[in-house]
Length: 343
Image (cartoon, rainbow, N blue to C red):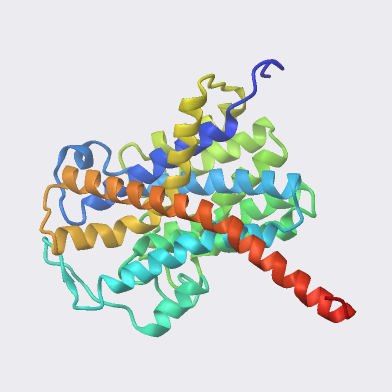
C-alpha cells in the first residue's frame, strides 16, 4: 500500500499506458501503407494486442466510475465518447468525398454508403454492419460501448456472475478460433460476434477493480496470453498484454512526485483517444494525397497533427463549455419562472 503522505498516481500511470498502447496501434497500421521501416519492424505486431490492453483498462476504469459515482453514468459516457467519435467519422467521410484514396501498395479506400455510416454513428459496427471504410479502428469502440451498457447490469450483481460471463465469452472465442484456425479480428468475424467473443477481455478489468484478487488478476493476465498463443503467434503479443495487466495491477503502488510530469502524462492519456480514432484516415490521406511514403515520418506526422488539433480543440472547449452551461442554466431558469408565473 502507498503511505498516506504519498498520493497514488494510479490514473496517471494508466493514462500513460493508454498513450503507449495507442501508439502501438498507429505503428502497426503504418505497415498498411509503408511496411519495413524501423518502428514497424520492431513493434509492428503489437497493435492488435494493444487493443486488448485498452479493453482491460476500460473495464477497470468503468468499474471505478460506476462505484464512485453511479448517478449520471450514461451521460458521462456519451460526453466522453461521442464528440471525438463523431469528429472521427466526419473526418473519415470528408477525406473520401472527393474521390477514393489510392494507397501506395495498391489498396483503394472508397467511401462507405450512408447506411453504413449511420449504423456506425449508433455503434452498430460489428453487429449490423461493417466499420466505415475510412476508419477501421472504430470496430473496437462498438465492443467497448456495449460493454459500457452491460456494466450497468453487472454492477448490480456479485463479481462471480461476471466471472461466469468471462468464462462463457472466452470459451466461445476458443471454440470459434479452433474452428477457423487463426487469430480472430474484426475483418474475420461474422457480424454479431465481435461483442460476444471479445467482451471477456473488458470484463477481466471490470472484475479486477471490483475484487482485486489473485484469481481475477490471473484471468486478466493469462486469458489474453492463451488467445494469442492459440492464434498467429504475433511477436511481442504476449509481452504487450502481460505488461498491460501487470501495470494495471501495480498502478496503485506507483507514485509520481513531479506535478508537471503528472500533468504531461495525463494529457497524453487524454490525447490517446483521438489519436486512436483519427490515425487511420490521417494515415490514408497523408500517404495518398500528401505522398508521404516513409513509415516513421507518417507516424510522427500523425502524432503531431493529432496533438496540435487536440490541444487547440480542448483549449477552445474549456473556454466555451462554461458559457454553454451558463446559457443552458439561464434558459432553464426562464422556463421555470414562466411556469410559476414569475418574471
